[in-house]
Image 1: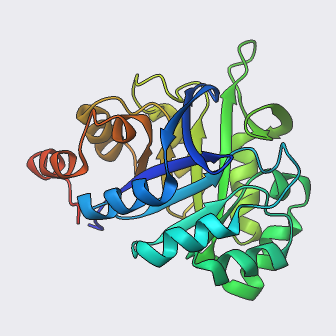
Image 2: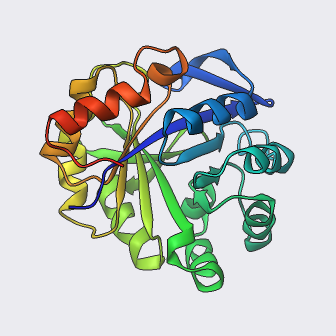
Image 3: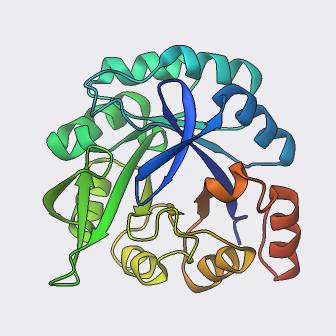
Amino acid sequence: MLAKRIIPCLDVDDGRVKKGVNFVNLVDVGSPVDISATYEQQGADELVFLDITATVDARTTMRDVVRDISAQVFVPLTVGGGIKTVDDMTALLKAGADKVSLNSAALARPELISEGAQKFGNQCMVVAIDVKTDPDTGKWYAYTHGGRKRTDWEALDWAVEAVRRGAGELLVTSMDKDGTKSGFDIELYQALESVVDVPIIASGGAGRVQDFIDVFTQTGVTGALAASIFHFGEISIPDLKAQLRNAGISVR
């Protein structure tokens, strides 16, 4: 069995790591460079850096911050936020990113996924999907612009389309669970793995070690992403991995 990945997420706004609940009420956590270095020392398998206001502010991702992180941190780095062109991808990969994450721009123009995959390979292309449940129908929909705008795409349909276009990995965040620490959305990931065959990273809702055990034993996700529980020291990565091993889950 492939080892499961533990992935801290750095949501960056105006050069600082921020964290909120359900994508709002952001609190300053600290310097992305310092936090990234700490996570590498603790044994993080990968890092995800998301410039959460790049699309809303109509600007590109902060390449200088990516460059500073990659100069000090050597675990795989996925970077997203404000990527609209293959040139944007090229710049971020040259700055030190290992993979690029597309969300709003891919939904606006799905061909962007294919263009990136053709130039850099599917393994470099991560499509991030922010998912929220429609309270009237119970269906999952994909959202853009940092969770501010609902699209017409049902999340499962969009996942299939993204993979067909060349996404080598999906980073799927449950907006309903984000920051709530109430556990991952198991039903969502079970549904996703039934329709796509690429690695899935689960995001949104991690609050305790049991939440990671549940998502790894009840779904086929290959990675679990969290932010606040790591940022605020509620769970340490070494302790988490030790308890996952004790539960019979393969980790690095």
